[in-house]
Image 1 (cartoon, rainbow, N blue to C red):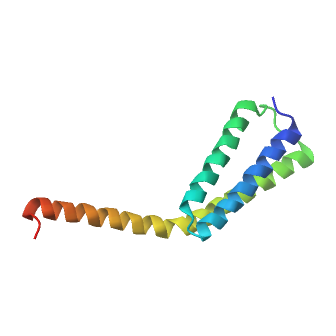
Image 2 (image 1 turned 120 degrees about the vertical axis):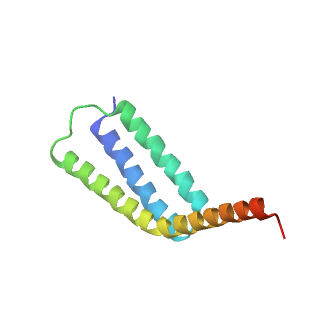
Image 3 (image 1 turned 30 degrees about the horizontal axis):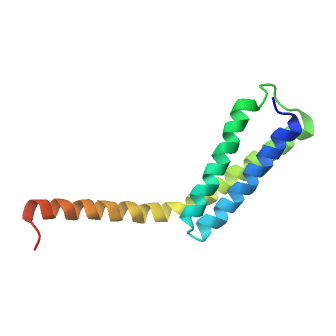
Length: 109
């Protein structure tokens, strides 16, 4: 089991990584975004496996809540940055699918 300080350190690392993810999304650096997301997932896994079931109290609890809020805010900003790119990608995929169906139905010109 992790101590409260170890848990808060992991949450702080996750918050820092999510801020880096915002920067990667801002630069459209999708490879870095995925790498950072994998690091956050590894931290989350360790918390699931080692965080005690007993809730934190007092200042430690408040710090944990603040770190979670920071991560949620960063996640919203990342979604705001990635959604237009995802829509473009979806249109491209749909366009390619339509093109394939036309070629399949009518042959290439």
